Length: 84
Image (cartoon, rainbow, N blue to C red; front, side, top):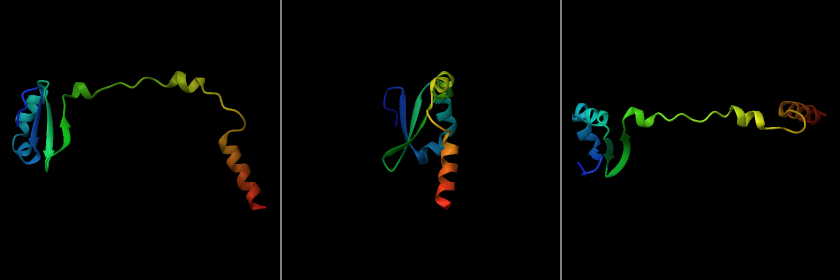
């Protein structure tokens, strides 16, 4: 069912029969919501809209300073102490 905007809602059953048409619409920039039992279960969007580059965390990771021993040493020491 076309709702007049840039998004279309269609049942999963109907979508199987009209997949080629739906892909053409999505390619042109429209969004398509797939409906199953009256609930939205999926959304088809143009591939360009999906690609979002996450910011680099390199600087953030470099800024983190830890105190004390590395966790691996703490765990190893605790295991040794528990044995005795």
